[in-house]
Length: 103
Image (cartoon, rainbow, N blue to C red; front, side, top):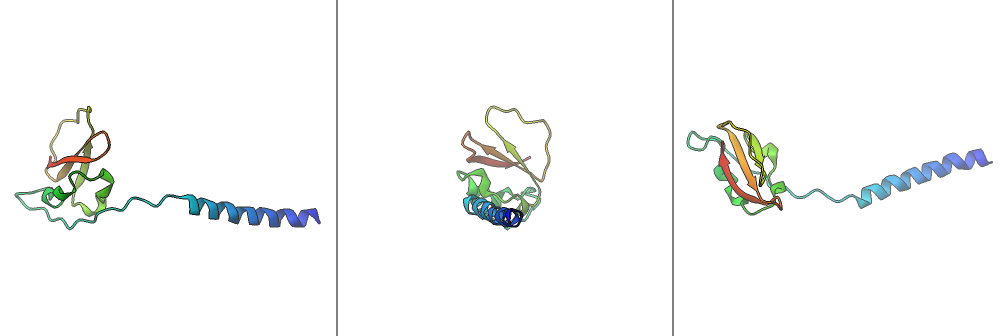
């Protein structure tokens, strides 16, 4: 009889652990989808993301930006080089967006 109850116990505990893990998980931070269009005057479409200045970096959805995003942290010297369609996101120590520019 012991061999029959152990598998049942393991199955019940597995369901309990999976349910607990799902219930305890914190939902991801909401992201802001952007409708961005690059132009010759604004090759990285930075104008569309300028309203996010002051917001946490996590509010930018990288998949909605037409190009590459580079995060520039305080007290870190960025690698040299300019990429026209890249958005440089300057953040503060709390990961809030301080400024945005192409390059």
